[in-house]
Length: 529
Image 1: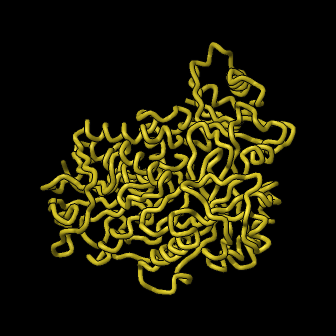
Image 2: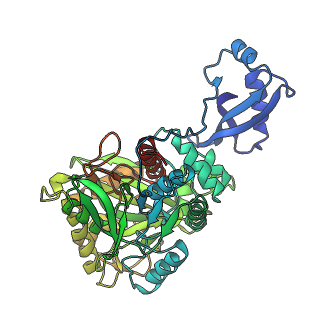
Image 3: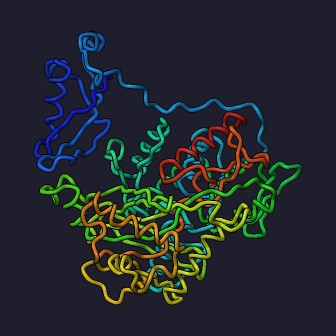
């Protein structure tokens, strides 16, 4: 096939216009065009008076070589081979099937690949099935009663299950295509294969996760829920098995550790067992909410609300005089701020959107980077304690009942506590507590955000509007640790393979899933069935 990039179609044109543009660019008749499919779709809204959809298209044509030879266009070339190539199995024997710990994106895709290659993995998940987990999460949001083992962080699908299901990533890896294909087969919208900023939506993602589980089981894998790995069995620096729920012993030479960024008790356990861990930078800040209509207007101008565009998003950053950068992260158009705590007596926020992104508010994390110099200790788990300290402080400032501290942007900039909501009504549940956010954030984070807000407002008109709401505290932007591993993805403990975001090697659904595949490939290349 031939790949043609930079095909621009006006927002007012039908998608059939793509075919017309293809024929013009390739200088062929419609009879010579056998077929075509969209490879990538993005939106160009840089000009106020016009919005374009920009496409990259793969076309199948007659006399391909002849057509390519007569065209002088660097945006027309042969399409690369995107088919996933399964690796060849190694020759080392396995006495026991591989164990995968965790069912977030890394764990699910590691288990899926192992199952597809015939390795019959055993998957252990500390939380519950997504159906039961969803009920526990909703109960927490309604009543403030937290289950430490079944919440936004723990359970089938991992933390990404209660997010926007965003699939954007900066990594360039052909495995991304496999992830997208598997998600579509499991029930995700087909458009994710080509949309530039694809998302699944929390409502659809829960069913996708369930279908991935069923596929792993159909292929010979096994998934056990409410099965928390509480210890490792190690002999001569080699994994020999795991202990589940403090009691049951399971033999295994291979353990893929895909535990997510919030499994703090597991971090502590593997550290005590001798796994090499180092501190890693992450970010801390708030969730900021605006009217979605304001974001649409700022990004799309006169085209705001157009049915082809949907809810607008944004990505902003500013380097401050403090030496730190404030930036937006995990932006959720038409979504809500959610309670994402996983430990008793601590408040954590996150953002979530459903597929339609049709809620009144837009929200995003507004974060400031922190690192080892801020942790007050050289201990590998000092970042964890840093997170806990500010999450506990947010719990106390919010009233000690999982209400989240919140403040209007105008009051935050003026240095005064908020007492009344105005245009923007906070979406966080159970409830928010109007207060002064400087009481539950490091002072340098407060100063950095105060300096950044007016600057970001110049990039996105209305971002620093007085009535916008900030809710604290967001601490789980990424893992606070990195579990050291070799080029073969193995830790210093033989047979222990750290994977995904919790291990410090990914940042989001797509990169975590790809890392899970890479780790599974490393196991497959070493061991035979």
